[in-house]
Length: 53
Ligand SMILES: [Zn+2]
Image (cartoon, rainbow, N blue to C red; front, side, top):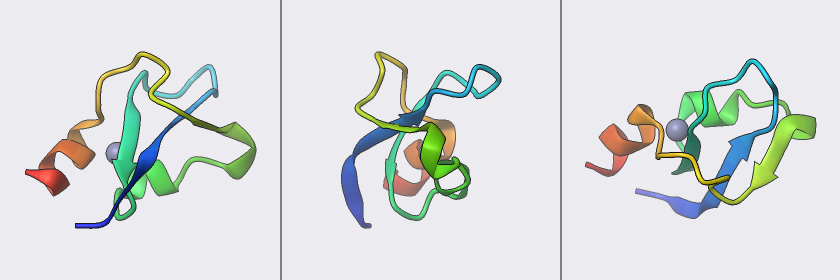
């Protein structure tokens, strides 16, 4: 599966998780202006976990 460096959302109402799978719909739904690279100290999102197994 495609991996990229982690990113997360800085939107105050977003879930406190980070993403690292390019196919994660939740990660891809983050508006570009809310996207921040890095984990932000948050756990990996459950969709990304499922994708990466
Ligand atoms: Zn994700």
